[in-house]
Structures are given as structure tokens and as C-alpha cells.
Length: 346
Ligand SMILES: [Zn+2]
Ligand SMILES: [Zn+2]
Image (cartoon, rainbow, N blue to C red; front, side, top):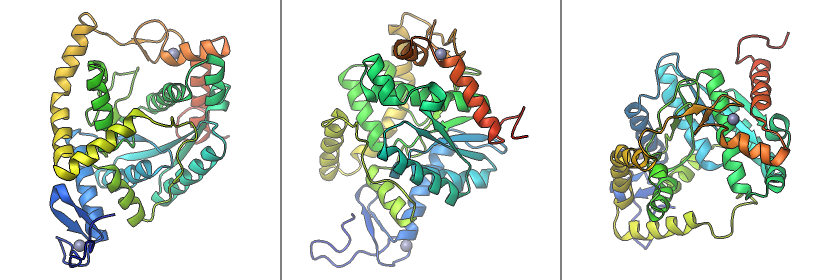
């Protein structure tokens, strides 16, 4: 991983305690032993959480846990900070219906939540919506990845709205954010760029803001963090991942540039965060003045007017929009877990 001891140079020592280092972080010009590397990452996460005012006493954060290295690292670090702040964290795993990949992911997610002492809500798309993600994609004649994105976003938001959560925490790392940002720049998609800060705001009753605790933590760092912390995670890639996703090409290119220009990525992220309000203004102007979020007429959650993208998708796939029914199923699930008032397992 790091360059510790490579190229015949003397083994590096931890910049904090002098113990043998396991990782060197060029942009920080620092080497770390396992313990101080974990502290380095936790500090970066803590700064983002504080800046976003994400943790308050008796607050609640819903964490999306996919079972991959990023989501378990995000959860582990988030839980440490949340505990200090007196904020509750609830993990959510969405069973997409992708066969062996889904069952492996689910095991890792449940194990990670269990080990970190966080309740894990497992939501089956097939049970809540009426068909798995590949089935919805086939029936709607839409790419699996775009269907998956719509379904996951809607379910996470529905759960967070029901629970009155402050934020939905996502496992996106700094490399993910930069890849989306380059893609957004290439398409001059200001609306997408405006959502690429460490957090997006909540709209009461309609949408709970999204939070990226790993905003300043890079992919390589989440891997080392998960390994050092001994977190369970699934190494496999999603079977529906496109063979040559644009995002991967962008990440490779940026990583090559980072090697010759250490610090390029972290300063790009900080500038992006500062530019978000400008992109918001541009996006609003392009939409012809004030863009107002309105409740979807089927499910009542955020939409641009009329039906939300989830209700439109399920109408196309199943003949009728699933929003209202799926919301009721989610309420039932949360009640059965004792997470929502009114009912529970009698
Ligand atoms: Zn150390
Ligand atoms: Zn809807």
C-alpha cells in the first residue's frame, strides 16, 4: 500500500510516534503506524462532521451500509464521533436482489453493524417494492445501474423521513466525489455539481439531507482503514458494474496526476466545496428562476412536481406507481424493529 520500506530506502517511521509505519500519505507528507493512521482518518471525518453540524445530542443519522469497504469505514468512523456527541446511528442495508453478491454484501453489512453496536435495518427491494432491481430494470427497459440509483435513493430517503433523521450518511469517498465532479464539469451539469459538497440540505417532510463523512478520505485510505480496523467487508464488485465506467477512467487519471502533484486532489475537493453555492445559483438560473421541491402526488416525498422519479419508474415497470404502498411497507418494517412508534411486535 504505502511506500514504507520500498525502493531499498530505510523503513519509514510513524510521523507521530516513531513506530514502524505501514502507510505513507504523500499529500500530508506523513507516515503512520496503524493506530495513528486510524486517528488521521478519524480526524478528517470529524472535521467534516463538525463543519456540517451533522452531530447533535439526541440527533439521528441513518447510515447507508452496502457492505463494501467505503461504507463500513464510513460507519466505523461515524459511530466513534456520534457516540461522543450523543447522536444515534442506524445502519440500513438495501437488499437489491443481485444474487450471491447481495447475500455476501448483506452478511458484511450486518456483521459490521453488529460489531459497531448499531441496529441494522435490512430492506428487501423485492418485498417493499414488489420486484427486485434487475426485474424492475428489465420490465422498465432501463439500465440496472440507473434503476438501482433511483430505488436506493428513494428507500433511504423514505426511511430517514419516517424516522425524522438529521442526515443520510453515504460511503462516497473523495475519489468518488472528484470523479462525479469531473463528469459534471464535462457535461456542464451544474445541478449535479451543486450536490457535490460534504452535505446537502434537508427539505422538511420531503427530503433528508445527504452527508458524506468520507469527503476528504480517499479510496486507498478507506481500504487501509478497513483492514487496520479489522472491519468485515465484501471485496467483490457488483456484477452489473459496466465494463468501462467513465468514473474509473477519471479516477485513474487523477491518481496518476496526484502522484506527480501531491495535494492536487485534496485541494480540488476543498475548492469544490467552496464553489457549491455558485453551482446552486447557476443551476437555479438555468431552471428558469426558483426551482421548488414539491411533494410527489403518490408518495408525498420530494419531486420536481407531479410524480417523483421512483413513482414514475415503478409505474413504468409495474403498471402502477409503488410509492404509497412501499412507504407503508417501510413504516411496518420500522415498527416491527421498534424504531417507529405506533405498533411494534405485540
Ligand atoms: Zn504512530
Ligand atoms: Zn413518489
